[in-house]
Image (cartoon, rainbow, N blue to C red; front, side, top):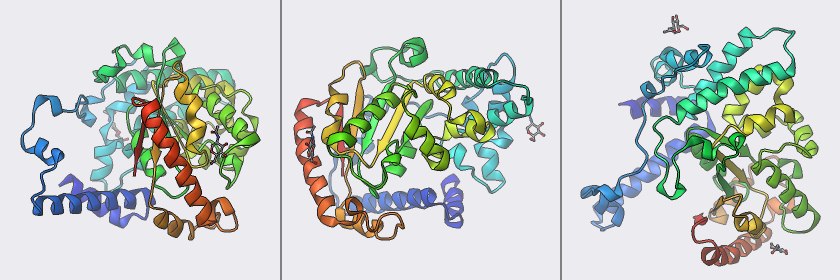
Length: 363
Ligand SMILES: *[C@@H]1O[C@H](CO)[C@@H](O)[C@H](O)[C@H]1NC(C)=O
Ligand SMILES: *[C@@H]1O[C@H](CO)[C@@H](O)[C@H](O)[C@H]1NC(C)=O
């Protein structure tokens, strides 16, 4: 019922992400249909027919009603308690806000309330402190009763939050243009309390980073971002001010940027804000896999790397229709794409034995 409604909404909306989701759902249903028809015994279906406790997900499903908050000044309270502004309310009214689908509805409502409360006299520091205070509550709320994965060895939120000296769960999605990483990135950021570095190498232009000076600069930037350190990031931040989609995809951050544009690109806001989040995701289409070796080797960083691979014929077909791709050989030359895929393949083979617990690929 709910899915039907959402699908018809999807069809009516022209949103790319929505259509992608629909296609993915259709693809999965078709696949399941054929598997069932052919009587193939897959471990997956087998597990569904005979569920055993060991196959159950450690993550309980949560409902919108579960997000109730106990706050001291009522700001976050407002953000959570009024369902008519939330996901279910939106569906009733025939409008689904993408922000809600991606888990940033609380931030959207909070930013509105903070903006109403703000005065022109507020200093940058005051605005930042107000946002940090409320976002801390939102994160704590979103993480109530969260089932931490047993491999993480602790259940205390503080152990994952950088501002308390904790070590966040960091993941890195590596791929190339037009491979589905925007979709994967959105799936990852819909997880509660996730901060999302979308395409942080955008200021490198339509170029692949493979070696040399560009690689050194790229690794410097990624190191800083993975550590929520926005110092020495001037080129990146200046670029972002003219190309707002650098931050627009980070749905939680973007709600505050929209309300308070004057603080959005300041390290004095970005650094402490980023440090509130126990989950940190980063996706890039410009960095080749072998350059992530030093991240994987860094035990203190504890990064998980996912290589996302798409059939290059589909990739090239999709790239052809972008205005920014033609005439950039890293993007429009099939031989260069295939060379990168081959290089990533050899690296992936090596990583499988070197980092069996922190490297994966999907094709
Ligand atoms: C929820 O929002 C609506 C409209 O914005 C408002 O009329 C109503 O009083 C709110 N309810 C609560 C419980 O805050
Ligand atoms: C990574 O692979 C590229 C080829 O794509 C190569 O030129 C470069 O030297 C390699 N870098 C490292 C650190 O292995």
